[in-house]
Amino acid sequence: MCRLIESIKVENRQLVAVQWHNKRFNEARSEAFGVNSFVDLQKVISIPTTLTNKVYKCRVLYGKEIEAIDFQPYAIRPVKSLKLVDGGSIDYHLKYENRNALTDLLAQKGEADDILIVKNGCITDTSYANIALFDGKQWFTPDTYLLNGTKRQHLLFKGILQEKQIKVNDLQYYTSIKPINALLNFEDTESVVVIS
Image (tube, rainbow, N blue to C red; front, side):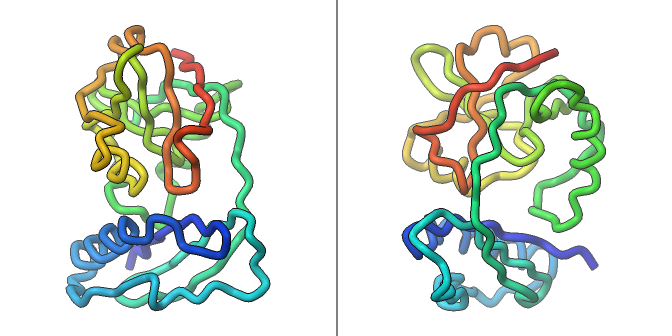
């Protein structure tokens, strides 16, 4: 049986944007395991007294039930370049514990820091994040994502991002590309270079 993961940012000893994680967690449990009882992660996750006010990643491992919750200090992994890689038939629409398909693609990154996965000529995600692209006026995110990330959903909801299909040939029209995920502050994330 596949197990799933929910990764939640903890800052100042608080779960960040937990309502978006609740939504994805409960929808994923329903789809993958047929479990339709709502779980409020805020009520089942206890912040350890040993955590400081720094940033941590709370990792929730689950199947039909939550199997483990752990906390790790979080350090931003510097990513300055992305290598375009064909994702073939990869499916990562749920946040699976088994990331072998992503790891196999990541092995193709060469000198780049990470990969930008392409499916059917369209841009999707990096190995660990959705992406946002700036055309000089507006931020966009691909409608062909692999995983509908919580930060992506939140930024769409706030109107900061607009969703659209972005093909490989369209990359030339964007002046900035940023990775986005639940643990990164969108405003503070630096732009990356795409290597074809």
